[in-house]
Length: 91
Image 1 (cartoon, one colour):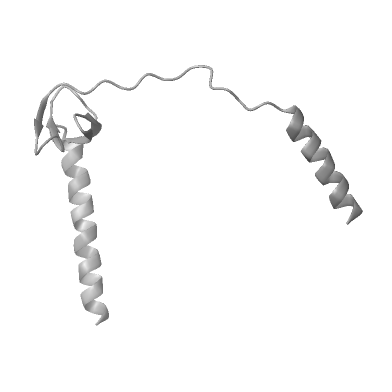
Image 2 (cartoon, one colour):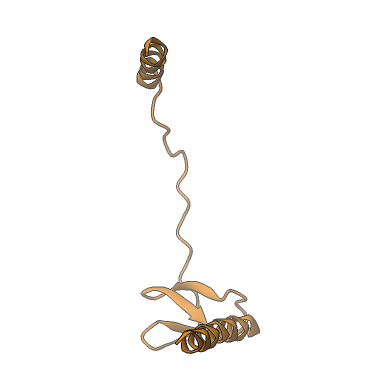
């Protein structure tokens, strides 16, 4: 018990001496991606932008132009179908 109390005092003294870390540089926000927005800003279409998820008008937007978007959509759709099938087999 004495060891724990002594270490606690040492740690609290060190905590009082330390100053909180200050953020030296703030990173600028990424600009709103240029392109055509659909469904009130939820979807975005720009072939020149390779990003699937980009900063949009009202938060984030899903870029429908790159083929990787459709690969991810197929993956998640397959996952939903697999979970549905496994749920029906468990009954």
